[in-house]
Length: 225
Ligand SMILES: C[S@@+](CC[C@H](N)C(=O)[O-])C[C@H]1O[C@@H](n2cnc3c(N)ncnc32)[C@H](O)[C@@H]1O
Image (cartoon, rainbow, N blue to C red; front, side):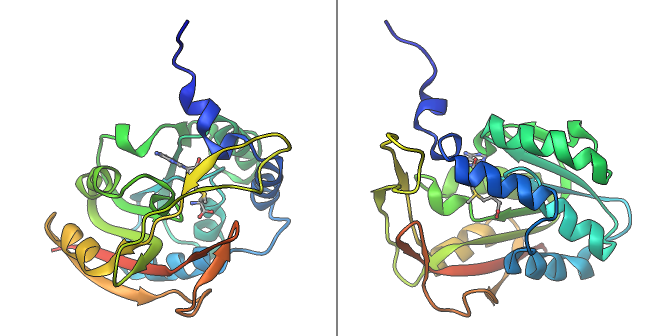
């Protein structure tokens, strides 16, 4: 017999109680704001006109909403994520802070269509098999800016590695890719954006260990030309 449950079965994000707990605590403001979220909000601010829409792609449970809200950045927040359990956490908690539950949707970036003013995508594409298709969807959706924070280096590195931080008995692999900076920049430019590479404040340009593997975080600010 066959079935179509492979996404949920192989999705690491659906198999970590630790991540679910952390993402719930971020929604409840029980942990410090991520440095990258603060940096992203600051990068976004000069490009926002009141009433603009913003899509947080691969939003987890949607806690980036807090980074916008507490700075008074006047955007309408929408979040999508492929992991239903993480989206559900945000839908349960964030309405208490003013975000309607419907603003968070279960959706894969690859399936996205629509128009928004701004797109933010942090710490997502490096864990996918490659960046072209999802990043194309994001670039095509964005009227004004796309801000991406991913692992990127001079030379590409593709690795499909075990995630040893999952729930007991779960044996799954995840991509930990670093994408080539010039190629990634050229790709974004080819969709009509001017792209600036920005030092990641949290890692300060040094490799950061995440689930036992080095990540080379870089911010890219793409502004529609
Ligand atoms: C490392 S978490 C990052 C969450 C959040 N952006 C942050 O920076 O804290 C990666 C997120 O990407 C989501 N994700 C993975 N593949 C995805 C896809 N194809 N489409 C949408 N979301 C995806 C996961 O479910 C997970 O919530």
